[in-house]
Image (cartoon, rainbow, N blue to C red):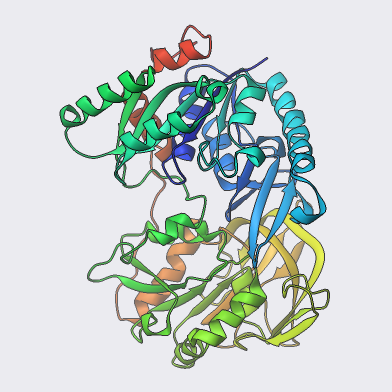
Length: 510
């Protein structure tokens, strides 16, 4: 049976996923077979497993950090908000249906979830030596405690000591940790083995008196203080990160200004991470037409969990008209997944799955000669393709598809890519306008490959009269290794190993 450690937090976005990923890497480098686990996850960004299952993006990255292939058991229950109180529930990688609490009692819901969680946890227990388990939100949300299947119920089920993470950068971390401990029932309180204070800036000597008080008040040790890292190298898991963006990413002179429409149901916005990392790119997240200035070099409509509702949002706010006007002036426009659907002529929802009940057909932005129909079946798969776009013919890309709509091109509308199947067959994918400036694709991660990304960015540079740049090269040291080094140097790893009943590393650092 695997040894376990669980990372919980005083709130969302305190760094649980990052700490869990770093521990996965640390344990793997030190000789253990380690796997991540998150029982119940509400997230907008997904990862596609090798067998076509859909799990939380963070668990996919944590598995990669552990040097293993992600499986659906690492996140057996994934919930994806759709708006208007609805959410799609995914069980072990496959769509289970939309969440409807009214058809089950709270006790039935918890029993169903814990049975699914227990089975997946049991499978991982047999295959690995260490499980790094991540909680969700806070274990002290007392109004939701009875139905919380992501935190302390899982800690008890897995017999896992809990490390509670607080975010120093946001302020109030000392009070949040002590307050969380005070609100926890005695049996849950006893599960907490220590604290990690994350995202710390400043002089540790000034923080130390507060840490001493925390240890005195709670009777538990502070296991470490992790200094703030501006770029962890890991993708954000949820939309909370977007709410914290107050200025354009990489804002400065001599940069390409790329607008990203901040859709109400934006999902898989990690598609833009690779662009944001380019030094000559300034991303501007826009949810108002006044923000969509005339000097934008390109517009990207990202993925969405509800294309129909977000199309209505664009039309009602004037963003749709603003995008159409920019496109008419020759500004390149790109749509990814739901954004690709929105670029088309029509979106048809015969079963009311996107529109919330009644069948609906609505007009898209009309920038691509395509029609989209929504069906119950969901396509979830990894994919690789080569470009058919005028500026990137033959460029290879890799990514994944997660969508319920099927999009058809009109006669004469050319595909943007062609998918390459395992047997070598090539299937047309996406669409491109006659001018070549407007294109759409279902491929999430389309910008991840340096050559394709730079090729597209260079078309924007050349439009401005700037010189083209060479593609960036992959770093020799992976970001996850830098993160693991940073976290390991900040934590008392001997104490963490002892909590799990292990003597320490099998190999490597000690």
